[in-house]
Amino acid sequence: MKAWVGSRDFARDQFDHVAQAARQPGSTFKPFVYGAALESGLAPEHPYVDAVMDIRAADGTVWRPTDMSGTSGRRMTMRDGLVYSKNTITAQVMQDVGLPPIVKLARNLGIRQSKLAQVPSLALGTSPVTLLEMVSSYATIAAQGEYRKPVFVRRILDRDGKVVADFANIAPERAMSQAASTTLIDMLRGVVNRGTGTAVRSRFGIYGDVAGKTGTTQNNADGWFILMHPNLVAGSWVGFNDNRVTMRSSYWGQGGHNAILLVGDFFKSAFDAGKLDREAIFPGGRPAAAPRIEQSEPEEEFIEPGDLVEGVPSDEAQPAEPAPEDEAVEVIEPAPETEPPPPPPTPVPTPLY
Image (tube, rainbow, N blue to C red; front, side, top):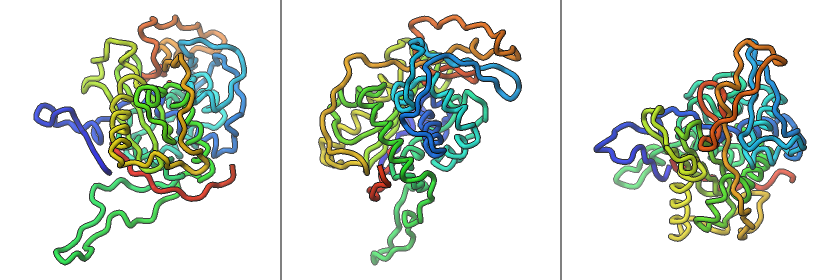
């Protein structure tokens, strides 16, 4: 690990928001859903219909995930479902894959302490996790599916320079296939090129081979952003200790507008200082180039608690009222609220929290 910032000011707040604070991750959890789909054999271009569907949970409750931007009724690829953080598409992917494989993959990648509730809304990031777990998981994806336990100290030497202990020389665990992780990275490139994470490029001028995901929770309680580079993975969470305190602005409350600023600024500084190679690419990637950034930046979405209809048959469930415009973000609350051939090995990225 290169850096660890647990709070704004240790003198005022000794609570570690990296390893201690468990918060709902919103759409930053979605890559685990799509990763499980890739592992099951589904292709990135697998089509789904962008439409609201009723999903019945094991206890008989009905879940109807929606997107505030509405639905088109048209076909959309699985790839674009992740790029544009579509809840309707993610829910369908979850149905096709099943919850157990999603939970298993999340565990393998790095969510190893927090409890993951096997309920449909898990797909939209309703189970609280830590920033440490999330960045560790994305580092596993960036390392072509090889999990390495995060370490603070790489090695200890004695006064003569002899190695007393080596904590980094541990064989990695295969958490995800190399082919699936390469494809997932490519899908997440789309998030920063044309999805909810375009500010990384448009605001900070980062044109290297990077990929990432934004996340926002209901009422702007939490903002997330995690970015992957072949040699570094960085993530940030923005919020308050009391999750009843939220950010007032629906614009600045989104992970693609708040947490992204911290990660983007750090990456820009690292590139400008020559700490990171601008030309480094992931296996299967292309040389760095300035991509075309779409003018309209899609917003993250969530669905209201009313969309979980307790014990009501699907055909009797009533549609929920749309949320106010100033709440057009994405998931979160315990009830679902909504966000090539195998390549050669790549350098192991270093996680930054």
